[in-house]
Length: 270
Image (cartoon, rainbow, N blue to C red):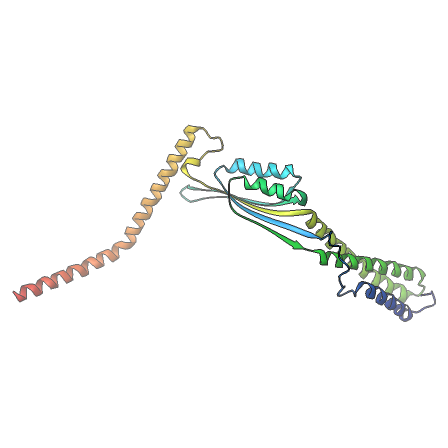
């Protein structure tokens, strides 16, 4: 595309170049998969654990220690504690979304299996090979298209050609940035597995304060917890009888009337 070439002619040349590129790569909208190396699959791994624990603080610290030991990090964490209006403690709960280097995934999962009581465990694999190499091919094609457009822009002299080339170059750069970001995200997913851990504290009288609370305080808290349970039972029992009392009175009246009728019938027969 020489300086004397108008936008329509330059556009025709660009279309020819793009067509050649897309034919080589399989088409911009639906690139055919290149030959995928069998030994370089792009796999992502994910796992999940549901863990019940009677030593919440100790096991929570152990999970984080094992994570640091393999070079992982916490991507997301949500923790909560539940208690009733009467003060009864229902324990704490933590949801941890962890990122673990793939090479250390099995070792990390084995370490989690020894923490608390593992209620459920799940592991899955997702193959991103086709998507990854399709994205890679698109990036290569757009880089070629970018370089060609920059050459056209450098040799253009007409204002309308310059504007058109700049607009098209802007579109190419935007799409290229999107694809490169997508590839970086896939690289992150491939290099680091995702492990979701739900840690749930079990509250029983014998486990109160098991993480180091003095024995006297533990006994006192256990007694208070038991009395709280008894109090809640009595409250529920009283509420039940209060709700059932009108029905019981009505049934008693019916029973008394039926009894009186039966006695009357027997007396009249005599």
